[in-house]
Length: 536
Image (cartoon, rainbow, N blue to C red; front, top):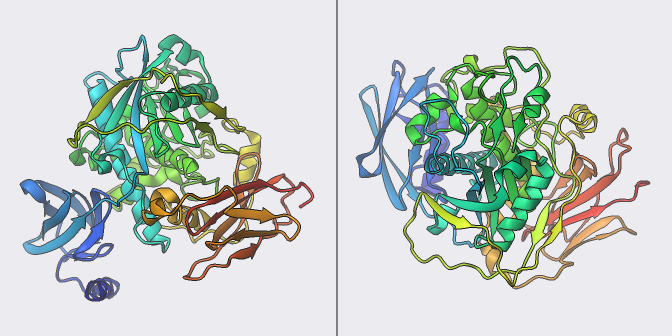
């Protein structure tokens, strides 16, 4: 480990000095072990090279562009040792990565929801494969991209390359298919909150139910009823049925109107992000943050999926970054300098604030028997019908929602926060400091926590008289959030080997008059959410 770290420092030093004679990987060290299966390699090559070739397991070969001497390449890893051969301009290098999923039961499960009376084919242009099998492939690959992005951004935030595990990492399917009891006509007439509640109830009373899963689900029946020239994103939403972008508790739920822009294989990732094809708004939904291109739709909807998945991990809103509107730029993480001009917002408009957030987590609680995986073989999809189990008795606690583009949410985004945000990064995609801390200690991002004996309900608690948070495991992060909209207005983090067992709650900023909720997390992932008095 010491030798590997020293090698990485030497390589980064050569990058800083501009002295690159060999292929240099800047974000990973040779021989590093990672828990996810799609590695993002970033680095530099000798001048004059236009592309880099990567040869991986089973002799798979991919080619990636080089811009100003820099490259970004995605590599599909097999379990165990991976010997990667990198080649650019006649220069070759062997690079080793080891892929070992974390030992955990806790995972994110991608799901494609097919409503009763619907054939499962999602909306898209002619010539595009819109079948349920294609949907499962796109969703599964998209989930892997988000897994990789999360790891890279937590590393940049100083917490190491932590991320969630996917169903496939536990030898499950890339994406599960749930045949819902909800009829397509009813689904298209429902609002987002009602759709979330019903799908959540079906998931947690059916064969896919598990306390160890968080669900990343997409509705097959989303339908955009065209408009010649929708002026605003609200106009577009008004013409879209069976659509959702809503996350909390154990479920992040989305529509499928832009799923046709998502890649189906690794070779499509870069071309799809760079696709400058204009969206035909008479036929297809434009969810691109006013960029108007297929590549813009991919970036915004993939980023929105990460934003809403963040809510299932107990994250609130931030002024900037992934939990703000920074999720629109996830393409830059993978594309880098390969060319983004076609997908920039060419119309000078305010960003659309349409992804709905939750002030309290949506949750469905039900006692279920964990299904046993009968086969270790991984399929692309697994089909299930959401018939409730007789012994299940769900209790639904939806919480309040902030409406799309609500004045309250827009005002929250424009307010200044206490000085806790990091400097804007070149790709504009990052976790805010308190968000990164919550994820770093979250149970879904760690493995040893699974083996901790059953914890009581009050392992982390708020003492209102003394205005402190206590935990015998050590307090790691505290946030003050607006109760309506979930905007973070203040926070404290406690890094290091010896976090305090008791910590004073930060004072709210003087401009903040809204009711606040205290959110705190300790070292082993216990999360506290406590409404504060209005006179606090």
